[in-house]
Length: 144
Image (cartoon, rainbow, N blue to C red):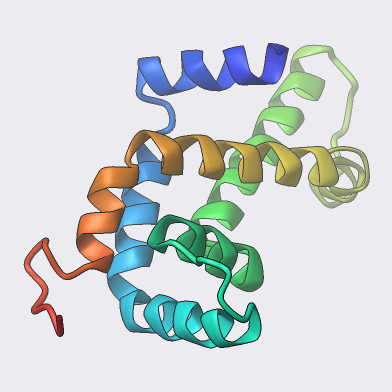
């Protein structure tokens, strides 16, 4: 799979480290919400096992973002790169607003899909660390 290979390369080069930091911060900041979410879904699923790992994933899917500020920052970087590319191609007077609108229409859905894949990929890579935080084993008091 080309996207999986791309994510592996990004991980190995450290380009996904910001997502890893965002995931750690997200689980720390939303620890109790994730635990509450898991308990609520245990009741709804009537006996089906909702693991801590699954609870983190489901909660992220529900809230749809681990770092809205980080995602906006990264999208702005992509738009700035597009402006630069067009300038390098000698497209004359550049309308930054128009370029931003075009980027959003053409690339935002694919960018978001890739971002979600990257979050899932990184989550798998640092799952043990995230589970320790969720369970209160990483500097948080445990209620168990």
